[in-house]
Image (cartoon, rainbow, N blue to C red; front, side, top):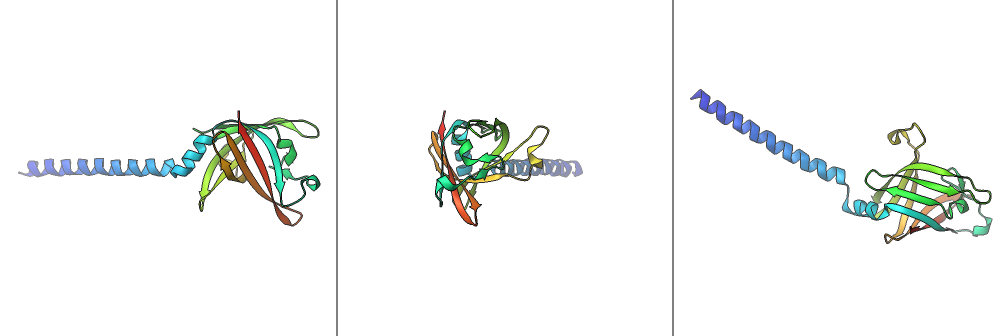
Length: 173
């Protein structure tokens, strides 16, 4: 009789373990996937893009030399090439070095966030030998338009004591 109860107890424990593993797996899958709107936005952002226009709101653009991304004047990003990989959220952007602008390619780690219904493109620069998780500083741009072939990102910055908006218009290659 004791053997019979040991068998039932063993089967009960095994079934509980399987149930708990199943629940944990479902929780893990849902928590890693992120909100559907974020995943969908990241999917249509992947690929190769060119910034075809940089414009500034809130001030006369001809008076502004706004250094962005701690690298170059906002005008230097006109014509830059962006490569965004969605499955691991890595990528690069390349400045073409025209005029007084620098040239070169920068590695990035990027992701999209949903903050109160507003979608944001976030990225941080990753230099040789660095791990993205160790890079604390980054940049946040509001996604104001994203059709999959055309995208506008807006960066609000402080300029001479007031907030101005820099709009980057991307066209998919």
